[in-house]
Length: 214
Image (cartoon, rainbow, N blue to C red; front, side, top):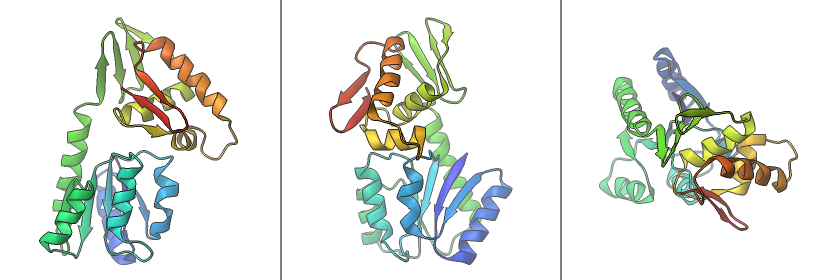
């Protein structure tokens, strides 16, 4: 499991990171909240732990932007704000859970695992005669494994993880090729490769925006 922790309290952030890593959870911790969108565009996480009171941006605004960017990773709000109004705002913006400080590290761990398990229920996607196995990193068609190139799988993975939502072209490019200078035509070639394997019409193109796995 991989978790993104956004927390600008250095002592608390380090203690959360150490605790979760001792429980075999990989943690990427950022205390400068301005870095979140550079990281989230090319790294996939199982859960995001987000503080609301940050140095440069409001956590509520970050949450809202994440959902506007069609990033559907489960988000746990971890904050000292405890009013029902604060909770209402966060849930309306797309938060999945809300934990107030002070808190028990074990409770945070339990909530992280619960959210991750809820998402992992659908880690194997079955569409007609095709199975996309997210954990094994394979595609099976008519009972036979289909060989995919590494890049084609990465394109399919991010589309499948965000199934039903448009994944912007730039986010796809950054996730698969990171900072390498690659043109849109290369991405289109891999989309074409995937379309030969998947049921007709499954990958939808939104011109000027991105692609969606239907």
